[in-house]
Length: 259
Image 1 (spheres, rainbow, N blue to C red):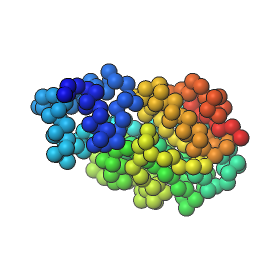
Image 2: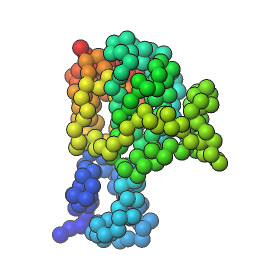
Image 3: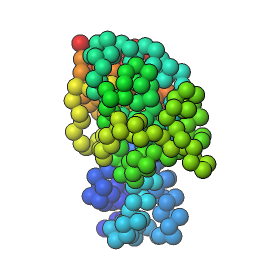
């Protein structure tokens, strides 16, 4: 048998159900080769054996494989638009019990930002966010809710004062915010999507996917949205064939689903 990258992708899928074919190959292969070298292992076959036998190395691999770059209120102007226009429109359309999904939520910065943004429009008791990620390690970090000062730099000052407590050099998010978020492990390329969502937020993750995988996910998001629901994507992303998927463009980073 030839223990090449094709072999490695198949073995990784057996172990993790993560389909590496959905990621840009050159970029992902370089990341994986760097990790293998860092661990002092020679060849894909030996690294697969290591992943099968060593739980610590396995968790390290999954964590390294998934892209976890996140921060609160990333691209503040887009969050201002969410606050001033999108959330009020959704409340007017669907009421205050909105069904919201933060997909590929990483360490929780995004769903917690959503709760804080929504808190300007309704009591916390009305807010429930489903937050999902493929990586259970980052979900564990999200549940702890402890962040570096840099991560919360863009949070509006009044929300920062209200919902964060300084702990040493870090900041702890308030339990009342954490209580509004339900975290679950979820694979965007394999698992079933929630139905009838009023708002889906998935930002700066799909840029690492192939064009085919991106199109599949955006199409599935459309099916997952309720009519006139909204998809909020990242500043580095765009949906080329959005009309064919049943979207209309609200502005650069917000797409509505047709009635």
